Length: 310
Image (tube, rainbow, N blue to C red; front, side, top):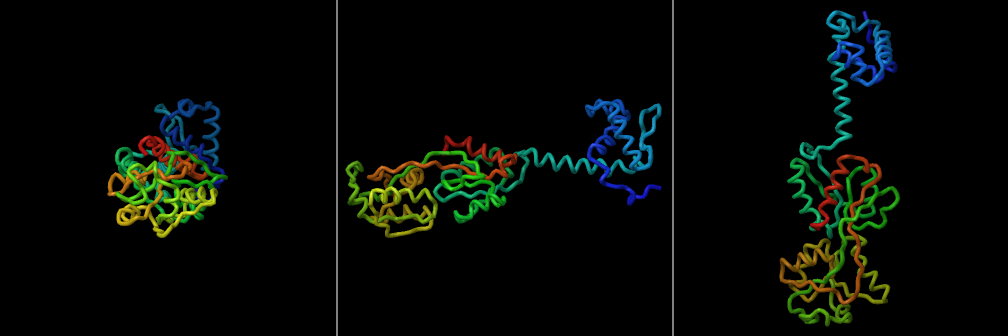
């Protein structure tokens, strides 16, 4: 009787199990070779290895074809189950079906981009991947690199010029700056082209302290010209800014898309700042370890395809 402890698993490779499965199905070495795309001698050799390994003929010739021995019948279910598990594991890693997936994507999205990207992304999930979920992570900028490297997040969306070596980047949209002021602000006339830089520097500013490089552009440009604005209020997010501007003579220079949305929904105005500020690219970033991941590829493509809506 075969003792399972006598079998050396190092002698079994996946091809032998696939050969066993195919002979079971085809009941013919010749037909099994054709199905597997191998020569008949290669399949015969594999069967010979299996017979030596199990010390059993496994399949015998009959008028009905190659039929399994009792041992082969006993091996049938566990071998087929093992192959199914292996194929499923490979399929899950080689394919991504958004319609059936229940995956949760973890994203790092800076506050200045969240209101622009996330509503469109969630709507896309609803249409294309109804069971997929999204989790927005709050991670300090200096920890984003490690989060992407170790798979704590799939993507980072924002402006991260320091993410270079080992990372991929794809631009989603170009962002500029606008300044929010209240209706009837004494320093800003109905024609903002008459707005003086001196007034811009003297009036009180609200600064969103997100810690991202994009928001540092304003102060960098001023510093290059040996100028400085008067920041009198620091807030942790953009949601508070329109309310504070509407209720005071404070102003806030924000990413243009946020400023325009705020001006459309509150009693504030969005006007060009009286100083030329550069634009910057809002991009999606991912680490090379995720570059070939089908789910990550699908998510990146989905975000990129929506770029005209941002």
